[in-house]
Image 1 (cartoon, rainbow, N blue to C red):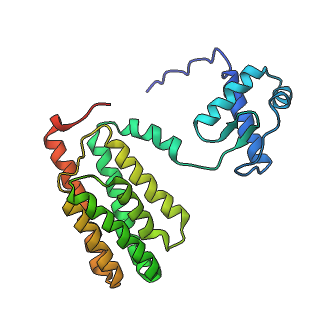
Image 2: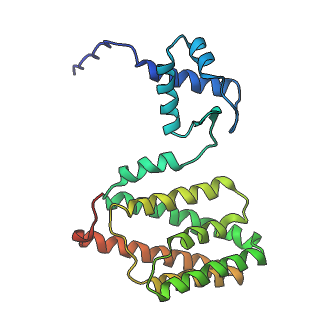
Image 3: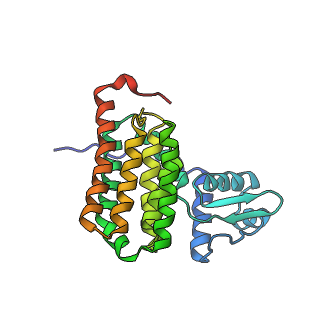
Length: 243
């Protein structure tokens, strides 16, 4: 069996790409944390041996992926990590492909159902009261046949906040945002907000009574309802939206 040979490289990487790599290395090697200032542009350009324009291109590229941030009249700083730049691209990657949306939903479903037991061990009465307040706001919207996306997002954060696992909360947030960003491209409109409100109320009831089997059942049932909406759109593609 013969293999085609690699094509020769005709030019080195673009200068601003090299600048990005050097700036990343500077941040890592110096252990700079979120909020730490970078040296002035002139000093950076001089150390790298590049023009200020090339340096600024590299900085702008790192700003677009959430590594740096420029503060007008102040300077350039290391930015706190955020999933948002990744999610902005993820939404376009998901597009109208319902198969990928199903996969995102399944990961989120497995994560929450699998870890709800620890919530039952740690959740406080104050946490449950906050969940009740969110669910009450959901009901107000549902009775008006309105969506309650913000409340839904907050509900799932509160449900696992007591575990004090920031990585878990971030992962749940990632999958939540990925799913709803995909909704910009595919019609996943909730046609029965009252049923969705009841799902969330039932989850809180199970959590408050520390009934693990029922809590898992209620969460799983909630996601099954979302899965049915996706399945409906798979069989009715005309409902889809285009970006």
